[in-house]
Image (cartoon, rainbow, N blue to C red):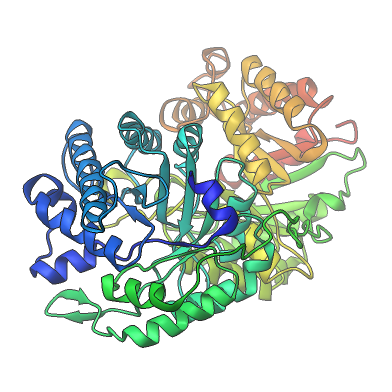
Length: 604
């Protein structure tokens, strides 16, 4: 019998914690995954204890089997995985023999699942390499014939979807997320969002939560959300919360009776797959299994989800009320000041208001250099001018907690339009003292805003868009990124400044792919001198100033002559894109906003 057939008529008891139990037994902080090779008997005996306690599924001792956690090569990681599988199978066989069953392994006795945990990574790690390693890990299990894959303690589906797809071709995939007591993951996504994503993924067989919280908080989360899941539902809580003892995180509360009572409540909530995470041991599993009847169909998992995520209310969106005579949207970027003087900023904003600009945007410390906070500056400009404003918000400097806090503050101040970007890296000269955060990229941040729109801003939701780097060397990758941002809820896009026919052709292709699902505003930057053009060409990544444009400037040009060249190029780009573009996104070097009036006309 396979797992899918088993769960049609039964609930499933899985094992408890391996890592914390191993460390408590042997008084060590060493990763237990090393013991797969160095202390096999220890690993086999722990698996046996869980089977004898009543677990019908055990997970391989491989939660931290990755090249980062084990600080080794992927080939060596695979050695530990193979050893872990062998140890688990040996434990199953020995447990069966001691129970006077047949020597031959039977599906009806104990299931074996691959335990796959998150790979820790820094913002400097190549994201594609991360996805590749998950694929390598899954492949190692497939080569050994494992047919159940347990992706546990994840904060989102980022980076593991390709691995999930591969695993699903071999067997059943279980995915459990880790959230805090308030129902949010480290990636800032809500429990509702995570379950909805997993429930809508055809390759995932069962989903739920593990780790992060104790049984009471998990019960509170499950109670609110179990109705929306049409797949087998998992609940694998910690025994409670840890304490710091002599520099070690230790779970002191080992009240087995209390844990069992809370698990019984979880089972009453309709959980199909139950088990234990950090701090639990075979005593907890035995207590749960002792008196609970796991037989009988417990949930109807064939119903449709009762509630779906609401579409964003876009009344506040800047693009709903264009005031240009031509119908083209006009956005202008104003850089927040480097000091406390906002006089020039406000003066520029008032000038642009009088010229009929639709929205002012404010970058978030571009190039990793400190400027006044984009949201606070946007709020000040809005108060002083009454204009529609749009701060940029990037992922470089803040974690999910800080970003959510910023978004809540912005919403309170009626700031509801955002340009979401991953963010420029910190300049190398200051990296030794200032560290990037990059908990997620722009798509991950969009998912957070989308989540907050559902849970906290459902009366009048935030509107957000993303950037397009049409000059990216691998255009296919950029096009896919745009489509991912659409899926995450982006309703508009601003492009990098356009200077070439190739940029225009690529942008046309992107617009054809996006269609009416989102507005696209083409980036316009009127370069004003040879020095300005040379700097943008040679020092600013993603901005492709051509040699042909560079040749239009001379060193001995007057200020007016340089500006005329910039205006000419800008008008040329506009004439070549106005048949398919929804508007234009202006960025003026040295705050020369007066150039707008010489570029834009009623004929735009």
